[in-house]
Image (tube, rainbow, N blue to C red; front, side, top):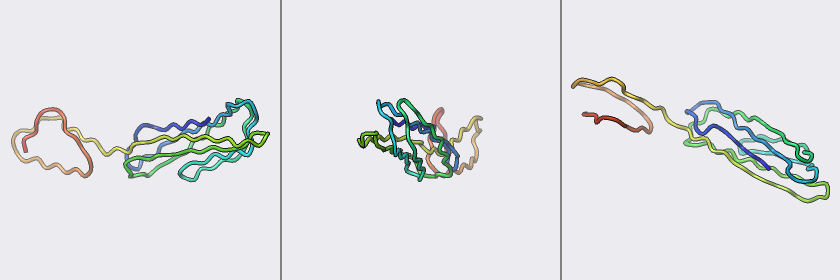
Length: 126
């Protein structure tokens, strides 16, 4: 089996880590195992019965709306049976959040924001 975990969200340019755990849940040794992901990570090896390997994969610098890392595992039992599995994890890249805390008297307020945003709370008169 394979499990991929990452943070639920990150800011543009943040560094974050995907953790990949591969476990041989079968009743036979697993040889010629290949673990690979969407971004070029590759591990080759073998796993005994009930053996696990965990890998930490660093990722940074994304400005996309989300980063999806798909991990594929395949290999062979000692009898030559091909076994495979896959899993994925999605990290949502959020835009900055700006909060206005103090009330502003009537007058000129200049606010510049590039990206997605939302407004909650009291109405704002512009």
